[in-house]
Image (cartoon, rainbow, N blue to C red; front, side, top):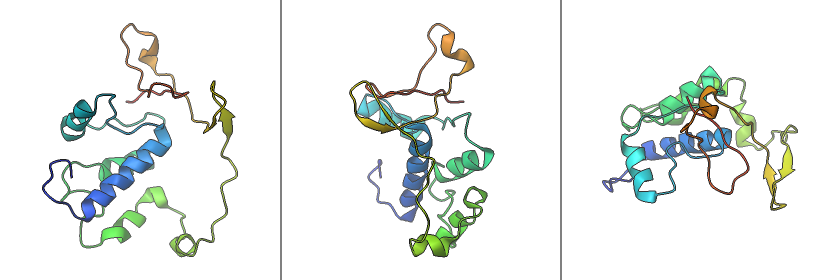
Length: 150
């Protein structure tokens, strides 16, 4: 999509990876305040995965966020079936998902930030390098959390 050469279902799987990544970290994987630099990051930078994510989560993120659309999870002839069979989705009853019969999660915590806006609390991870001079904290200005990536 970024290269404006057309796209197929592979971009949908990539966007699912972006959504999962952002839901667990609170920030897109190649985020930068400068839009042009962010586009370059998407095309050229290696994916940095959150250290706190499970191995199954890290695995599906790597597979969905593979830069080569031909090698991306879900891009083959089995499409969604291969994605749904990934171990990260273990225990999901897809019929229940389709029929919208799943209960609402009860472990979502809402907090207020300094501006008194409701936000979903996120896990704050302090990396070993956080205290080092020049260490990079990945955050979006104005948001109430940050995290370190591996």
